[in-house]
Length: 270
Image 1 (tube, helix red, strand yellow):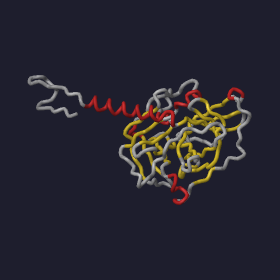
Image 2 (cartoon, helix red, strand yellow; image 1 turned 135 degrees about the vertical axis):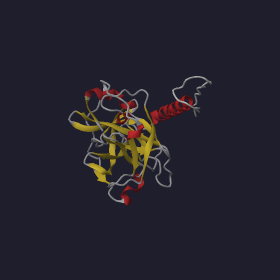
Image 3 (cartoon, helix red, strand yellow; image 1 turned 90 degrees about the vertical axis):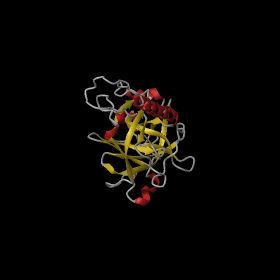
Image 4 (cartoon, one colour; image 1 turned 45 degrees about the vertical axis):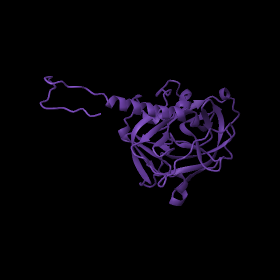
């Protein structure tokens, strides 16, 4: 999945995208090439397609919020989603079903001013069971770099859906609130792709790709910053878990003599 927007050059105060120093996409075809990136995987949506996503803890995957909605704005049921970590040539390192999803509470699917929702187009999905660090190492999250900073992206996309591709160097052209405009390449399927910074000496996620766009006639991509939203997204997961516990623990007492539609005793378990 991928959304596309046109952005006015003058409105953002940009002169022109500095694309000359960007590296091209490199297909991570071998196990050795892909070893450091197995935490990136495909989030497959049954009957719909796929997005890119990345593991940030043993049970949490980061992606774009719009990946979790159908075209009519209705939420996609978690049982239609599968995360395949390190997916390459038909085989993942490991795969998990999804227990629940937590898009940013401020995100509005199919909003008229969709480009303005870029900063909240981010979500956490919770896995049905943990992926141990011995199998796949989760990525840490860092604040986004400033304008002019260097980042990289690992993504799946149309015509390169069978293996991840790495763009090792692209640039932050501008930031606005929790969102970024990047010179990084993006195409359909790259939604949710992790944007990495290597400033600390290791790859840390600073955002997720949300859309491809144009500044003037130049292609760019949009990204939601990760760090500003992590606490909010985890709180949303916690709220959902608490609601489920409270809802399932309600006890209904059936008194002797009441008609219940069935013959015999009933025990309602939490």
